Image (cartoon, rainbow, N blue to C red; front, side):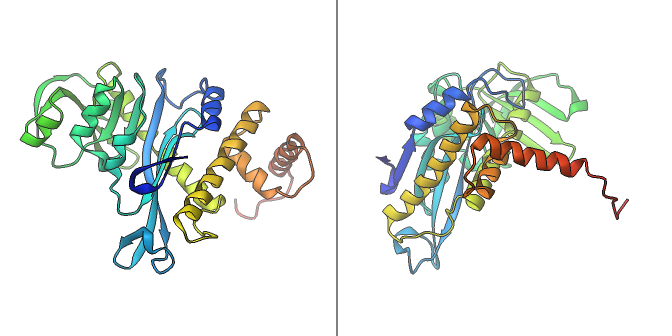
Length: 301
């Protein structure tokens, strides 16, 4: 593992991750998109300050952050950096290994126009939620289908001195109302070659990185640590991620049905069973089918 910012480990393009992304490269996305699509975010892992004083986060609290670039074709972590909780999320953009023609979606905590312009200069694309105090000048607008929730599709330039110096070129501003949440979103992107609806759909896929964090915390023991040193903490997180990658490889190579998260749950429940994996999965699916087809009367109709 290479050293990342503030001396903590950076897990980037390991052999397992490269193999996995090759296996899942033709996996279908939830949206109609041919380009590589990634979600970038971080999760905070709380620690006890008295046991982990090197990870000071707040006055009475310690924590580390796991910054993750998730390949959405298969939910595969392509890049992970572990830092202390004090490191601001946006600083990790400096280390982000984005490739040309790929798209990265992020929340508004990653709004830093100088860093976003660095992504743009790598011939990569971003879709990020705009902050409410965005200052800009509209150059022209394109027609949108408001029936689907779109409200505006504009080409803009930033007007404040710092923002304009950080990002001197045009940006695309897409306004969208999510009718299910009854909430308005405004997105910024440097991608002018996709429909406005696709821009909104790309941002919706960001929830997959939140699902990844939730599953990792609940099932792979990175909330309680066996050691208190920096090396012990980052080693345990690395073991958890390695477990995730290995299970994903097995699922794909055996062509097992269901989602990756479902497969991981089946493995967790049957961890000490001395059965072939294929039989374990078949038994689990059969139990679900039998349960659905049972003749038991429902008490609540």
